[in-house]
Image 1 (cartoon, rainbow, N blue to C red):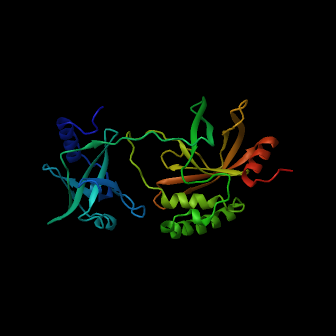
Image 2: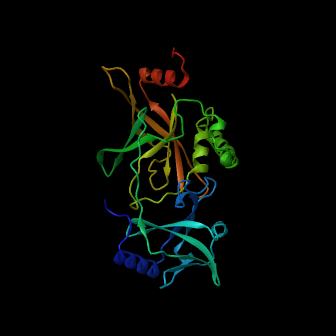
Image 3: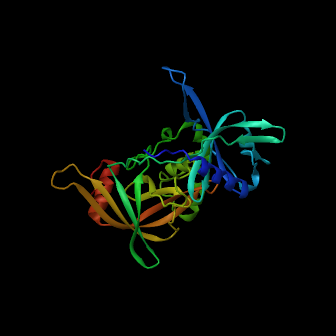
Length: 311
């Protein structure tokens, strides 16, 4: 099995790259917990209320000794002082990271680059089997260009969103977004009953930047809401290629338990009636309204959403 650690020569090349260029890095606090069986430390993610802090190239200076000095660091990163942190960055589009400690030095704050620098690896995501979709759009006159879309874990589709679904630590931020977006949607005449905006606001309040194994790789869109009138897609801004007011072809797939028919597919169109972003402009959600759909498909979606017969 190939090691994720860089070799000595690779590490030297990366270190020189950091010294020579204005390389942005992301600092993420991590926690250590003791295993009950022995004294080994196990690294685990920090609390969900703590967000990664992105540092621009001009906010750091890398010394030949392998020390990163932080110049005018944001207040948020100062809270990580004396704590274990994970530092992530891209080297020729390859995602790399190392674990270290944020220390106070005479000139301010510093990160010591350890001997081990590792490649970022991504586990293959298990896709939910209950529902998926494809969005089709034209790109440089190519046909059948599509985006894969999957249900985001923790978001229940075809059910009424409830406030208790929103984690307590982000409820205030979610409420602030909701007040702002409801006002905007009402002015545009696209608010409806407003239920679709609850998962939108929750997503934008809790989404965190995540460095990829390879920079710039296109990701599937997340589906965070769906009913018999609308569907909502979400992603980081770099993966969100949908445009407000534009109509897209949509294929929706529902696995069935019947032996003869394993899957129900429906083909319709939808129009983006609202695009929403978080304050940092790093994540986006697109609220889409169905615009061309067969009556039998509307019936299926209505009954799936409401558990009532469609008349």
